[in-house]
Amino acid sequence: MRLFWKVFAVLWLATLLVGGSGFLVSRALQQDWLLLQLNPQLRDFAAQLTTEYEQRGAVAAQAWLEQQRRQNHVRARLFDANGQSLLPGTMPRLPRFEPPDNARPRGPNPPPPRGRLLQLSWQTEQQDYLLTVHAAEPSLWNTGRTPIGLILNIAFGMGLLAGLSLLLSRYLTAPLRHLGLAAQSLGRGQFEGTALQRINNRRDEIGELSRQFGQMADKVQTLLDSQQQLMRDISHELRSPLARLRVGLALGNQRGLNADDVLWQRLDRECDRLDRLIDAILTLSRLDSQVEPSQTFALDPLLVRVVEDARFATPNLRITLQGESGLQLKGWPEQLTSAFDNLLRNAQRFSPQAGEIQVCIEPTENAWAISIEDQGPGVPEQWLNKLSEPFVRLPGQPADSGYGLGLTIAARAIARHNGTLHFTTAHGGGLRAVIKLPRL
Image 1: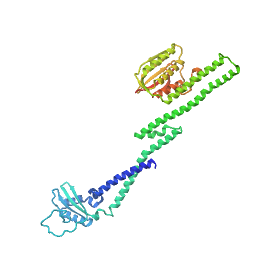
Image 2: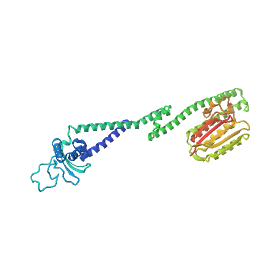
Image 3: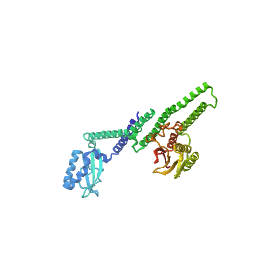
Image 4: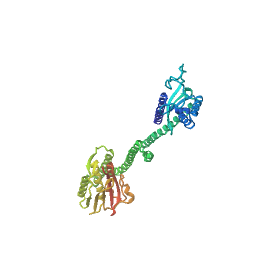
């Protein structure tokens, strides 16, 4: 059985059991309220009797009582607040209804009529009243009036409960069905976050589950897409040096060259390039695996070390570090060091002789921004959003300038620390990389 029908059945049956048990208990206890609701002749009896008594007098009220006894089999007596009888009434003269009276003739008493005895109180603007009402058994459950109305009320109540249970069941189970469809699309590698937008707007646990599932699915889909793209790029990048190695080996075997020949040196450089490429690919793989445990570390000393290393590598450039954050991060300091090092080396590679590279730490609303700005030739506007993609090379870029994985590794490492990396054009025309890391 589907969860929808299980939830519907449980809600409907539980509501029916609660309502039905309450009705049965009140019926078993013969509650006066239930009798008054099911018997129209008793519902307004007290109001009508006291109105007759106050407006038309005791004689008219007694006549009205006689009429009720004949038509509706209802007997009654009227008392004031002190228990003094105001009318003779129509109640049978039995010890169960009034105390013994020595003046009353003694004799065999008729059997008491079967029915229900009610003690009622009523208040008007003039005074308070007490009533003793006896309804004969045939009039309590009149088949011509009450059962049909009762059955209709019960049927209406069951239908209303069924509709409410149906709506509540659909409200609870429909989001789960959408989540199941989203999981199927994720399994096919075609997940779209907009499919869960309506569920994400909910403020309950299902909405929270949907938002967490959407974040997980987006990350999984991104990893799948990036891995597929990475495999295609790797195949393309490995094909060129391998082809050159194959041609060089064939030529070397044909010519019988010496070990110090230029061809062998060229093959050695190609092997070095392959080694660096494979090392960068393995670094990307380690970033995606997330196996290493995290640790808490300070950001400022890390940046100081990276800047000092960059100054040592390029003494002809002026590299400045401005500001400090005092930020404590939880993550992987080696990866973040590699990210800043890649960004600085990229700035060093394209900076002019005796140029300047500025590293600034500035606070923002919910994060710290670390900017690295160079004075190089810059990057065309249409390429800024593609710099962190794997194997991206700008038009006219030298072949020995790298494989386009350094900025990708930096972006992945920063994203693993819940940060962001984006590129803009600097004021002097160079490139400006901005890293934002959230505050703990």
